[in-house]
Image 1: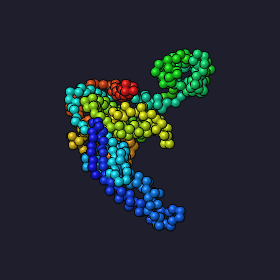
Image 2 (image 1 turned 60 degrees about the horizontal axis):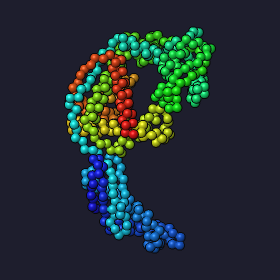
Image 3 (image 1 turned 45 degrees about the vertical axis):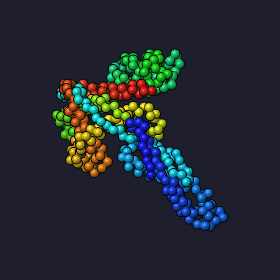
Image 4 (image 1 turned 90 degrees about the vertical axis):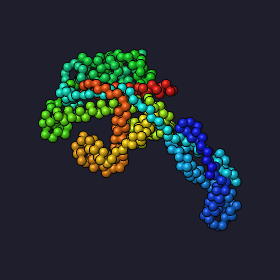
Length: 451
């Protein structure tokens, strides 16, 4: 077997492989002899079909089978001999495939990029320092009360925070438009779930009132045929409901797993959960700054096969998130919605893998168990969660990957200039949310630019 390797790009290789004709012809001949033993053709007894007839009847298909098997086997042998690290499956095409001639085929493949890590030294990283105040705890308890509130019909005008049951129909230029009507819709005023300006105009309305609400659709509205258009809605108000918050008593407290029903214990549990959430927000904010710096310093080429794998995974996540069902064909979702973000994820993954390799980072079973115990603390029966994870190799691998990523980020953070910034609980969460939204926006802008 002769192999030549051509570098067609930093991450693409073109292998030209030749196999002696004698090897192919001998393999085809042996396969035809085996076929002749079991061949059933009209006019001949089984096993008595002349080889010339077998050759004419089965020769082309047998040769195709043999050539396919040989190309796959020799490709694997070639990448092993040449110490190539393929990323995804190759494209294999025969260029010479004739009896009596050496078989020649070309395998075009992507390989993992060679990464020479550039330092992120000097990068300015902002690390929030968060203190949970009693006022934050009080606000969180108020939020929990609202989440478990009841609605009670009232005989008064609707105010901000009330729920109204309405029928509505929308018009543009006095013509009704699709999707602009509903009956018995329950809308919480101030929830900002409708077009800007709609909810405010229903404040002061009472049950039985009919109103005309005039609004303008935002320029970036998702339905392009409505974007920027002025519209009017005829609205009928059926009832107004006020929110009735539950008392912070034993019944309410027990809903959150505090079996004693004690207010002080409940507040401590709420504060502990808020501290955990704030810590997670801080870690994510610091981590993202580090990873953004790592990407900026190391603009490596990314194999398209790995990007497509990530796109496929993101499609499945999206289908699950939006409840599209297990039978939904995710290929219906366009790749363009996910490609830029997928490319970024793959790039980060390759760079972190190199950080882990260069620093010889690892995670022991003790490390994994400690991390699982940390996560399990949020559940009612922590030991059951620990036993489940530690008894499942796939889950342990996932936890190990998360630990290695944390260690890699910590190692990179040593190169950065870390600046502590005092933030309130709400500020820390808002900053994390803003950062996430900015990443999505940057991804969308980059995708538009590439288009």
